[in-house]
Amino acid sequence: MPAGKGPSLIQRYEGLPIMIVFVLLLALFMYMAPQVFLQPFIYTTFLSTLPPLLLLAVGLTFVIGAGEIDLSFPAVISFSGFVFAILFKEYDLGWLAVIAALASGVLVGLVNGIIIAKVGIPSFIATLGTQFFWFGMATVLSEGKSYALRGAEESSVWKWIVGRPFADSETVWISQVPIQALWTLIIVIFLWFILNRHRFGEHVLFIGDSNQVSRVLGVDVEREKIKVFTLMGTLAAVAAIMLTLENKNFFGNQGQGYLLTAIASVLIGGTSIFGGRATVIGTVFGAIIILMIEPALVAAGLTGAWVRTVQGLVFLISIIFYLYMDEPQRRTAFFERMGLRREFGGGSADRRGAPAKTAGEPRT
Amino acid sequence: MSETAVAPRSDEGFDSIVRLEGVQKFFGPIQALKDISLAIGRNEIVGLIGDNGAGKSTLIKVMTGVLAPTSGRIFIRNKEIDLTDYSVRMAHDLSIETVYQDKSLAEKQPLWRNFFVGRQIVNRFGFIDIKKEKQIADQILKGAIGFRSAGITVDSTVSNLSGGERQGIAIGRAMHYNADLIILDEPTVALAVAEVRKVLDFVRRIKSGGRACIYIEHNLAHVHEVADRLIVLDRGRIVSEIKPKDMSVTELTEYLIDLQHGT
Image 1 (tube, one colour):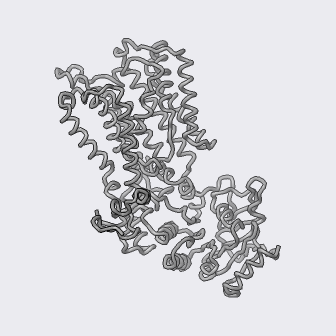
Image 2 (image 1 turned 135 degrees about the vertical axis):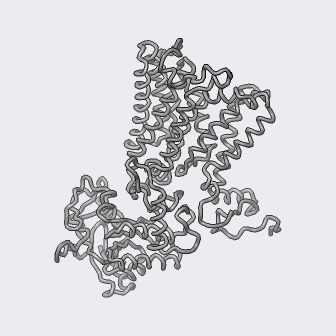
Image 3 (image 1 turned 180 degrees about the vertical axis):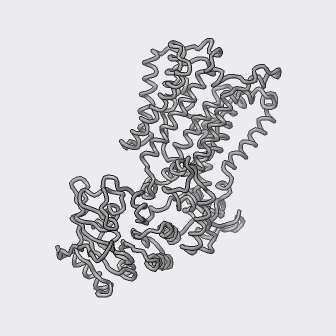
């Protein structure tokens, strides 16, 4: 890579490192477990399990890109899922149940945004609090019960949101392709455009870079933050509806598994934990990788209990990787601490540093 | 302490770009600005000097809509501003641009986004015309700022630029928006000597472009070199106005030291 002030390779091709990792991992899995990864069924299963995770992760890409965090979305999965399930099942409201569930997600996000932007509570604490609150609300209102949505597949809601458009196909795996994959794809592409091409997305990244600079440049920081959290709440509600319909069941803990996986998807994808840089494409591949780990481990003969461990490990490795790749000064400091000064990593990124020694040169 | 409030000079039309009358600013019980009245005319570089905490930055923030004054009136081109909805965006619309020390550019973003954020060129759905923004940014970079070499392009991220280059970018941006008044908040702080030279040249370009400039500076030599007049702030109050040609840098330094001890 030529030295200079132009964009680095990673900045030029969004999500490049994670795509390479994805291809390598997929090849590895195909080699290790051909009976799973060379069959189409695993991929059709992904198409129904990926959408909720992906919607959450893309929403979080905006939140983390803005230098904030949202821990309340698992509670939205519970709360909005409950709102949807009870209105759909007990009151038979159909599409109104969908609208009410979406509205509940908007409400949770809006409240988060106001607490964070207007009241000024750090998002980590604010959403930790609202996570307990909404999760508690879902538990209280549902009285801890779960709702089985038997017969839901007869409804137009089910057909349009999580239906199987090719159910008549003779090929089994095609007949199982779920329509929510299409909706999710459309939403994700739309949000890619918003982040990269829209005024709002630009504001999100500038806010993530520095609230103060953004304010000086005329960005309404408070308003944009409220929008970011509202977007997150809304996407979590969409995920909740899809999840509840897909499982044809609501239960109070249905959001719990998503906290780690959604945050991990975003950070594995290359969005900066410090905000200011975010990539939707990276998040998509991050989410797929996180999801692939489970069948891969099971196929390798490990129990499901290993899944979280490995996901956590991948998560940590990728954060450290990005940290040292993105921030040359941290990398330099790290190598200095390890007594390896300038032997690695004295690349083009830190052009103002002392001239890098060649690796073979004897140290004094 | 001599109380020379700088009265607005009312010659003809609007010769003052910004005029403040009796502006006060409190932060809780602390009074940061006491009865500030001043006018900034066209085509002049006004140096704003004073010790740390004298209220220089607060004054600038009030003038540019970042902070609302507690009381007082602000006129821009002789028209009084409704302070309840005065904002940075409105100051931009009124052709006032500010270059804050270290706070004018977002580090991780490319230059072209830094030029346009807050007033993007968008279609009616709010989507940015990236091609056009980059093209204009390129013109600013090569024209107004004069970065021709050094490998800086509109896609460069700010974090890869030196301190002087950053100030150049920020000043160039302000000039692009045809600002009548450009406010510089310690642009040479923490810069190497050669970089300071560049920045002072940028400041002179502002004036030769027929615009006014308020220049806040700690380094008296720098501000003495480029300013047409100097306004001295002390503990939230304007205490005097000095023409650099009447006083050498040494005399000015002594005057300011006396000011600190004289109360």
